[in-house]
Length: 98
Image 1 (spheres, one colour):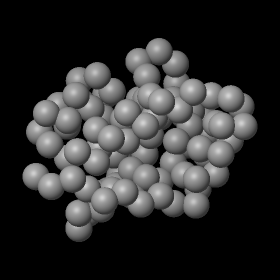
Image 2 (cartoon, helix red, strand yellow):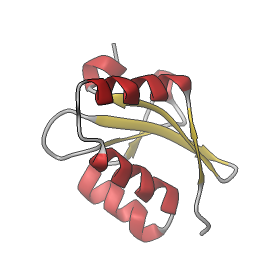
Image 3 (tube, one colour):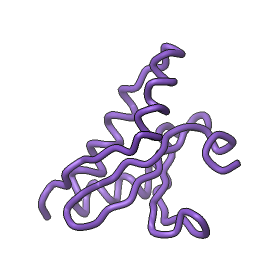
């Protein structure tokens, strides 16, 4: 499988900007994004097992979600299609699902 091309929504960019403003270390986020972009069976397995990656329902139908770290409440939401991974949001459950 070929690597996916990244794309970022304006909401995702705002979320990252807010994280940086809070001086949050985004290296874990970058690591998870890289796994999504690799688009290999091994990367998908790591996302499922280590980051609890799963498909979303309802308003987010067609998107996926995973935990950035096992400790804490930090999530990443993205969707894939046509060789592109669109990163939609990142933040806590409360920030993303209110």
